[in-house]
Image (cartoon, rainbow, N blue to C red; front, side):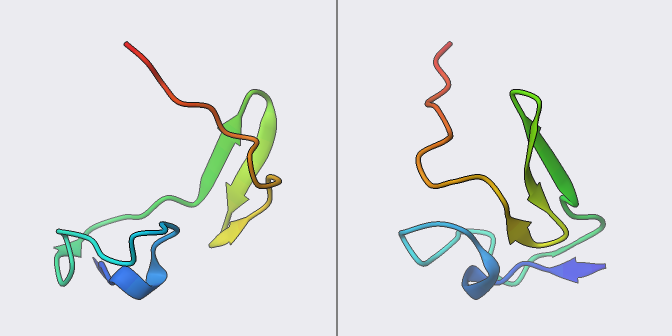
Length: 55
């Protein structure tokens, strides 16, 4: 079980509406266009590597 905290988030706004929620599981790895971008709590991709997703 994991408690969501704003301080642990990778966002510029500094808050989350999910603050204090207890959840089961968390993201361990993100692969972005074939490159590991996030693993075990560390951002590995260079800033600006992401793209906006449009529907």
